[in-house]
Length: 293
Image (tube, rainbow, N blue to C red; front, top):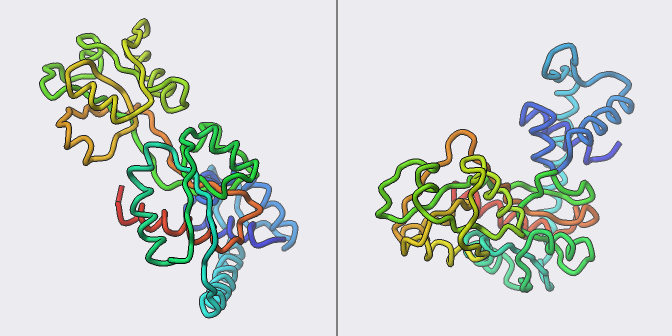
């Protein structure tokens, strides 16, 4: 038995299902099931009633989770009482869109909390590249788009935000639906070499299967500027509000079937107990919570 399995059990009780708990602790549903099976073998009795569609925790499972919570709180208290200075160099990878959104307030918070901590942000901006650099040990953590397949189980994941895709149109556009806007205007595509661009293109082609883009850009600022000048419409992850307000664009929701991307922090499982990693992750959690989106 290990503490990870106990934390997973606590997450199931908090989030209500194995799947939701897996997303919260950065595990696949199968990994969550395996951890619960290991706990049941350790304690010698079932922790969930599986006779219903959604497994329900037994009273014994609740008792174990409460004991694990008490233990975790005591450990955290000991850790706080013996706080050491968080210092040194930390290499943080961040995708381009988050460099102007979540990164600045998180850096400010980290500077206030840990002035001796030196955060370096290398010139990397693609999710695939960031994951490769993280695996190789060239960066310590990354803020990126979690892959559609959930990402490697050898990494620890913390989902911060679900960012919906929207259509952006010029302020003067008369059309009101995504399909009508695509029929009347050129399509400015988000870079399809990126996973986010491929998701956007798939959605566009569900609306107009034969449509080809007129231009394709990686820079969100460039796309927004092009749309604002009436050069076309686009489907992109919803940009930050100040950018939209500065250009005065129309934002058209894509409806109940709108795709979204998951913005997440990721770090190596081997660094799970690394104090510096924990403080950096905590800063992004706090910034996202304060942002409220």
